Image (cartoon, rainbow, N blue to C red; front, side, top):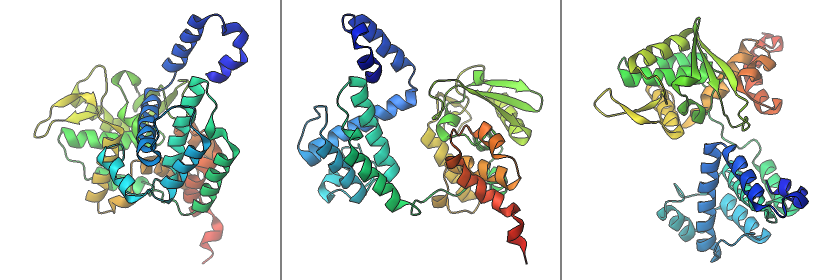
Length: 336
């Protein structure tokens, strides 16, 4: 936003009302989950600054403060600071951040400065170099959750009971896998009006995703077993509009009004994984996404067709999962 206004300063200089309206347009075009993540990361950064640096949050933030944040969160916070952040409930548990978490928080700080039209400390070359070196140092050491491939999926579906909770959980994992490996946040946000009945199942109109902030949308098939499980669940809940995956009151088959959270989707997957006899620490809801891509590779489905459903914009991200499945088709692996 700030870039747009800076480049057109002559146009907007004397019309604050236009600038205000443009900011509103940008705000409305930003996914709610993204805005929520920004707010959460900013709240964390402010609290960390007060406790660790003894400073109030007065942007623009200095480059030194950004570097201190990166260093402390990758190498480990001093124990008393770490404990206070947990006590204030801005940090869920003690210990260093994952690199992905640090990068996300830095991205939120960057977005804040951009939106305010301030000098952006995260664009500094030293900051970029430190993050780049950290990525290289951790390459190969990152713990990815295991892929939930078709054989594992079938086993966890067998753990779902026949009551409403079991029907919901079965629909969650089947839809999440078969519609291209959906992210847990995307699964949690599916609404009844996003689903269109077609022969053999449903079409899911995914209006927003992490890689589709413009809201262009994707039409995704939910067919076969996934389509049948979804249809059975929809017939049981009889909802005409709104979120389909909701919390269920304990000891009853009554749905809550509010959609389940992305975290709840992850917990459901982990519980089913454990029931199926697997180590739940090695799996997460992301395994539905990586498992879909791996299964496509195993079955010789082209990477292009795979990415058309997964929604990946870059080949490099999807390729590692795809190759993990496709390697089984390599004739060189069967010489004996």
